[in-house]
Length: 503
Image (cartoon, rainbow, N blue to C red):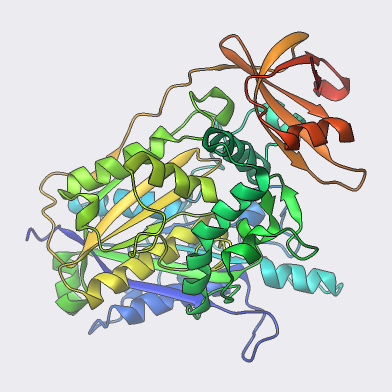
């Protein structure tokens, strides 16, 4: 192996649940620091790793990613340095990554390439969320001061929302992931000819095994095994959040979790005394991005995700049958179904499709979920030397995807094994307003304090347009039968929100 060959030397996870023994009300930065220290300890090095860390890339917390989370208790001015300080590190380079669950997996590829090129010797990816504690404190009317000031450089890459969501989606109330994914889900449901209740059971059958994995994971936010029927049945507890989703099958953001991954060159790992039994090699990483959902050729599909995984496997020289452990990002069912459908994989494959328990059950951990997936994959590889694991990481509304292949088997980095692919080009234009007929394509229905709101996606030639309705009769008609292909009338309404009815 070349001295600059990158390897993962340590992974760490840290979590706490509100009210349980030992609960310490840790801040985001405390959780991230604890995860980084756990990753350092996991390496079993002969020397202290903190002083050797030259690069730390932090995953952007939800509270500084979106206004609806804000930062009610304040936040660190320099997230990577705040986390590093808790683990005895002062890296030369500090990075704050863009929004999206693809971040941890993409950064592993980017930082591995930096190490392979000799520009870094040791780097870490760290992220954390303390949303559960934040909300618990706010519900009691309590406050904390989580603001921090840290000197030093910061490479802030910005939110990275450009091209992820259209302004008209936000105007029509479907800019948030739950509603956007629900629209994609209903395209697949109608293609399969299933009713809403039958499709809810399909989601339940996919996710019931995930709950069993989550139930056995000490870091899970919701460690409870559930049946497919329990996940599928709408009840007061499992209320509708956006047709066809009940609350139990959407990503869980109320978590207190931190995850970290530490990489080093082979030469640095040896200098620091990290046993080779701890090394896990990076055999292939690829990432790709999509246009906004309304601009895509097919609302239910993500060619970017398929391309990222196909490329990672190709670079690794592996096929699906060579992979023994898999974690597919599962904020909702459709990102998993997208890949199972594209690759002809069985929903009930004995390998399973999660190593953590999945985002609705293990917990979302904000943009940092895939750090936990990678941590579990590394442990699986160590437990079965020579085996291969694959992690798929999704961001936005199937907007960005990164995939990685791992093994204890050595990987040759004389040629880069990280590939950042060209963004998929849009196929459809997007109309903010339309007055006239259109062809319905998909929909979702969201409950609200003043009743339900139906949002329809319709085609006008080679463009798409959104429109809303609050009419209970139209909501009932949407639920009753096939929607795609039907003719609708659309006209502009107040506040740049279009309205529709069936012709």
